[in-house]
Image (cartoon, each protein chain N blue to C red):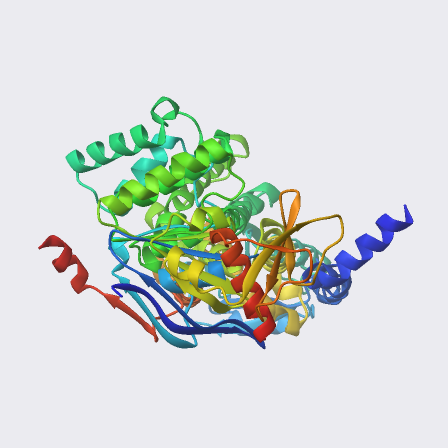
Length: 272
Length: 357
């Protein structure tokens, strides 16, 4: 592991926010931290970015100058134009004249914001704001890119654009960690960490997580929830049987990644 | 409607700061300002000089006058110096054809009280009536005394309220979190945040003084550099208070509440409206920790009395001390907000070298 969290614990008063969480973040790879609201995703990133001191464990990160960070609020200056936001970030990271123009031009082209240079940050759509925020975090070619739910509340087209930006940064060598509540986005990652109530419910490549589901999975149609360990998938129910025995009438199906993540979260819940 | 009332009470109960402002603050303000709101001056420090100083001092029968110094060797220049340096509000100069009473016109209420007390005193049989001369503000014009103080009040407003709002806005919009991850030191952020307000406030100060001189004919008798030094120190304190407020406020509403709690006592207890000397002893102590008290002393002293820096070292020094304490606290708290420390973190500066290779 080049960067990331190692066995990190964070408490807020009596509440345990993170317990023994390890998140590996390596160059040219995307690590996705996935989990529901309140699972501890943002806390993980705050520890990794150096905004929060862990009570236990270690955060491995490069020097501040080599980190790019986008908080859940996007962290844009609403009263500055797109160009002024770029200028401020370039000044903050002391990018020289030629380098800053080249990188700013590249970011504007990749984000599709070239025509919005003069628009105020606050006047951009949600998707454009997110793209600009990620672009600003990439301006100084960081070694570690930390993105807190960059796609939440963003339309599908903008989400695809954002993932294109992030993937390109990984190709260029950045170590990237992204939090998301969208399970399908986690499938793109080299490494997935599934958080459930501040603990790691599953961790590894999407294939590892897919193959780590204990028991069997089935599908059944109907209006009523068949068992407590079942969830909706389209018009039918997925039924998970950790002991390996499905109820009568439930047809076995091979789990996909989304099923595997839900089953892992349920398994973690059962273990508590 | 009932649902709204219940909801509002529930929200209010959880907003402890607003509750404190609504219940505790009025009580505190009533008690404090009840003791502070007093235009009557009961104790006017008087210096008596000249060959007949002892007789003149004993003739000052009015209890309002409090003779602090009797100097038979000194003359009118010494008496004027005492008034200019704020050591006395009234000075009696003997040795001439008739006694001369000098009054400090910048101490509006004290001078008015002294004037009427002197009018009540009948001269001793056979001795001539005293000549009364009011210095620095001969017509006892209220605006001459108010404008230098109002300049300070406006600086408090910009420095404390506007600065705190500016910093809290960063916190609310999430950009403060972003700044904390950028390669800035806490001091870079504070200095960068307050520099524009410092410039605007300085421009505002010049504007107020120019308008005061042009419209209200307030004189500027003293040294501009001394005034600028006092204003700069005072601005640092107010800007520091603004940053300090922002470190304990989560939103702009809280910042406004806190700024209000800091600005209001300065309006009423700094000597801007009520003379500090007329306040109850306990309340006077509060006024001694308020930066506006010292700025008013400096601005009135320089503008109206041409006080030199040597006579103002005390308020200047105290403002400098307040600036160090307030800005120091603001930096410590702000740094804690930005960087929680790295006891368990391994930031690796060597990474740059590796990346460069």
